[in-house]
Amino acid sequence: MSATLGSMLTVLDPELRVVVLEKADTIAGESSDPWNNAGTGHSGLCELNYMADPSNGAKPAAIAEQFHLSRQWWSYLAQQGLIAADDFIHSTTHMNLVFGAEDVAYLRHRVETLRENPLFSTMEFTADPEQIAKWAPLTMDGRVRDGEPIAASRDPRGTDVDFGALTKALMSIVTDDSANKILVGHEVTGLSSTAEGWEITGKSHHGRFSLRAGTVFVGAGGFALHLLQKSHIPEVRGYAVLPVGASFYRSSTPAAVRHHEAKVYGQADVGAPPMSVPHLDKRIIDGKEHLLFGPYATFSTKLLKHGKLSDFFTTLRLDNLHVIAAAGLQNLDLVKFLVTELAAGPKKKFAQLRRYYPKARFNEWQLVPAGQRAQLVKPDAKHIGVLQQGTELVVGADGSIAGLLGASPGASTAVPIMLNLLRSAFPTRWHRGWKDIMSQAIPDIDRTDWDTEAVARSSAATDAALGLGTSARLKPQVKAPTW
Image (cartoon, rainbow, N blue to C red; front, side, top):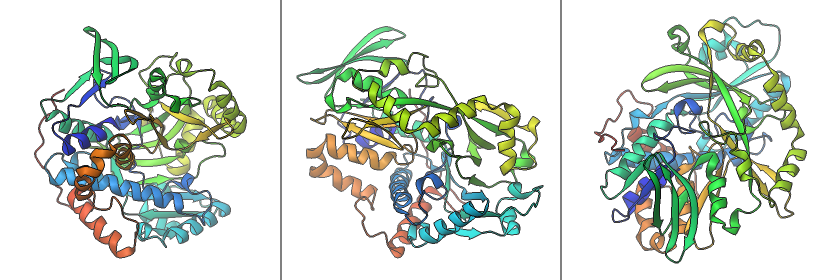
């Protein structure tokens, strides 16, 4: 999020001075790191949890539109020679695989509904095991044909995104301006409002530091709520977060990797949080191919993977204790799911993998920890806690401070979220030139008519700039990072 905003501000007004404060000693070491997320360019193609009612495709459509805007911003930067698209994004088919008559009927209905939208016009459905084997050989090789109904859907327009590489590329745009700085190893401990804006204090390897800023954005992942609470803005009162961790099985065995060219998502168990939908993914990280399966829920009171066990407790306030309690009582299925997941041993976990890859060999897979997430709990009108999917932008009344709370699919929808921030935090600049600049970079920024012809034309231009679906990929020259 901070990298997206920083790249936008640098392009919009090179006269602005942008300073990025990073607690860790490296950039993109938490949720953006490719091993800490699934890398799915979330566009509603395979996320069944976005569409509980197979007749209502509104949410997948909204996510697809947002991810389309993100891709347009990245393609603009690639065309300007500011980033190398091939370093972070690749074409990868997105699929669903479901079992049992009920889920087969659901998936068929879902595809029929979504195909009416031009953003999903290339989606296919099949209940033929032979066809599924052609789409995703590993999922059917060795599968016992016991008469259980099985079905799959696929869309070839999916992507695999290395969000760590993307974050570093965006940060390179920021540091390309000598007036800007990225300060790693700088932990913010205080946010105080002043007549001129904000005073930020903290500590680094070199001692205490202090700086002043007219506008502050808090993009600290799971730790964002803790920092926003330090600012004492009323807009964040009552908000809470619940830490949710995960682990994945990973394999880099060439014989398996080369036979799987998709991200295959299944149906989540009852009570599972949104980020716990099982999926068998092809990943491309640092130019190398891997397979990932998971996630498996883990538990820790840390809000960052490299955080402290006390992290969660630092967010507790009198105004959010009842919100957390209410959310827990309303989501007992989630509590039951987490307890069951935590009690599962390695054999039970691997049995879940074999549900999607019957011939998986235990010695070829390694269980690795993924990133920590902070599931957002939001107070509603009655001040009762509501467990919220996705992300939420919290902006102070005067627009001088904002922060992002919540978990997936924030990375994929970062661009439209940051566009909303620009409108809220810089309204005068937005209407006096910034909107025109961003409209040139992101042609569909205000599109409302997502008709077939417009989507086809816009998607083709974006894919060409990103080198998606083609053998020749754009490789602009990019300066080495300076942090």
